[in-house]
Structures are given as structure tokens and as C-alpha cells.
Length: 264
Image (cartoon, rainbow, N blue to C red; front, side):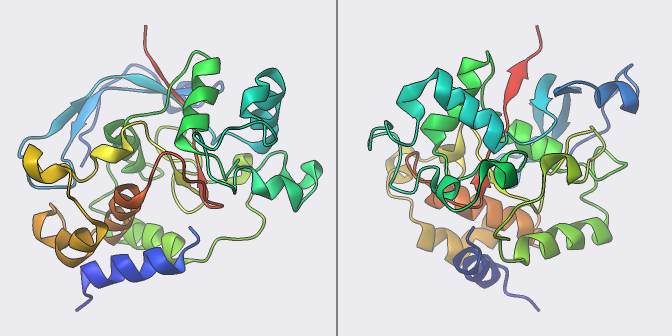
């Protein structure tokens, strides 16, 4: 038997870092066109048991690919306050855009941007009239396999995700267009980089306001499986553990993002 909580803690130290079928008139080909993908509304069961009912996720748009270094570099040219040289410590730690010193832009242009903070990722999305996806939106889309809205019940698909997550981060990430697409036509949701969500700091809310301010990652690692809907979903444990320990100024070489947008 695998000790779920220990596996989560171990992998987080080593790594550098259920949706229902939704009806829509769009074909898969239509959903995959353009820079953003239409995600039909639906519902899914959240990871922790304290939410007893399925949550409804409304329709929204999501970037087909993770934001790349070249896209983010153009953003810094237009918004110099978010450049590596000018960013203030209140918005990021000292590793901000560190990768741009180690490789040429030719090598980095089309790979996911990393070493960005929540503040800077949110500013990037806002500059385009977009926003970071919510935790529920991201998890809803992430449950899709290559041919199903919900691939969570497929043992092979779940094992594939876990194997992706257990690999050390590569020094050079793949181009975003070379990453696999899921049912929605969204590329690279797993196994490439971790991705920021807007409400990352709600990952471990207990419902008891007097206790929420004292939540610690050690408590999660020791007893997280007790309150989970599916104790065998190790990959989800890893995502929630990462979010619970994250702060908005942190940057990581395996943490990137993509943007979302409301459907008007």
C-alpha cells in the first residue's frame, strides 16, 4: 500500500517543481481553433469532502497553450514595471525570470514562461483583458483525458499523469505546441509545468474561520488523505499541497500559467 500523504510530501520535495459530460453544440475541431478554447459549463466533485455537493462551473474561455517566454517578454516591454530589472520585491522574489539569463531567447521563445509570480501572472492576463483561471475552472479542465470530459475513472490516464508529475523538471521545457491536447483542445495541462490559479490560497480552507489562519503544510501532509474524496488521486494531492505552501511572491522554475476569460 502506498502511503498517500508521505508520497505527496516526498514528491513535493523532489520536484523542482469528476466532471460530468457537458452538452455543447461545438465540435471538437471548433473548440480547438484560436488562441483560446471554449469550455462548456458543467459540474464536478471537488477534491475535499467538506464540499458535499458537486460544484457548478460556468462556461468560460481558456488559453489553448501556456503563456510562453516570448509572449511574456513582449508584455514586459510594454509594461516595464514588470521587467526583470524593474520589478519590486513586494511583487516577486529574487528568482523572477531567472531562466532568461541561462538560455538564448531562440531556445526559450516558444516554451512556457516560468519563474513568474502570482502578481505578475495576474498582471499579464489583465493586460490582455483576461484573468487567471479559478481553481475550480482549472481542475475541471484538468480532469479531461484526450477523448473524455472526465478521465478520472480511467486508471491508465491517472497513472500517466502521476508518472508525468514524478519526473524531475527538464532544463529545457518543450514548445507549447508540442504538448498533448485534452478533450477540450487545451494543451499541456499535465506534466509540463505547474500552473497558477487565481484563488490558490483557498485550497485548504476548512470552513472554520478561527482555524483557517493557522493552517500549516505539515498538517496537510500528515492528514490530507482523510478529508479527500479520492485518496488514490496522488496527482491531485500534489497540486493541492503545492498550492497550500505557495505565496503570491514566489517564483519557481517549474511554475507557469495560462489565462482565462469570461464568456460574454
